[in-house]
Image 1 (tube, one colour):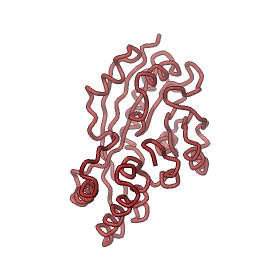
Image 2: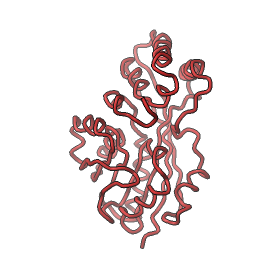
Image 3: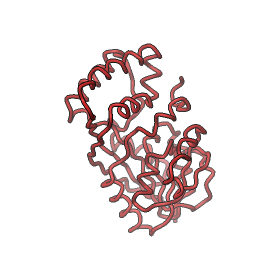
Image 4: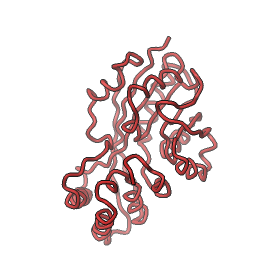
Length: 255
């Protein structure tokens, strides 16, 4: 398995958490009150975790995902009818000029070439449109259980370097990535906590969907990690998993 290759993990991706409805509703109101209602684009959409949340708050538009296995998983869900799915990348979405009022990337902007991606988002957005990069990392510090699980993971791979989950990203870092090209302005940061209650099976499947840990731990090491996590959660009927949706939104300078 390679960094960033989710083909083998697509079947587990539907178990991942969604995003804070509070954050998405706030951003929806901000975007549409500023530039008017219109279509949205979920770019790097995966199997559609963010797409589903956008459909739930009444939005429709486009979902762009480069991985065929991910798109195939998304096609199994009825909410996908609100969005037209297509193959494409953050740097080359293949969408038309000025076709959306709001573009988003959910837990995927860190995989993109940010300089090329922001130029592409500027192209597909209407004048004054918005782009949001959002992540939903676990709020590990708020839970002793999840602190213990995190310690277990790092005990197996002490030198592990996580590909960004959005937890450690700063607004200064995002300003550099989103504003330096001159395509966007006025960065807005919004975050909010949310909790998902998972069965043990779903919780374990969320771990099986994680690419960077599997790559660094190796097949045997990752199997040991899963076994240790299963022992930790064995006494629970359900797992309460705290998350924190963290988003950065910028407005296109296009006139």
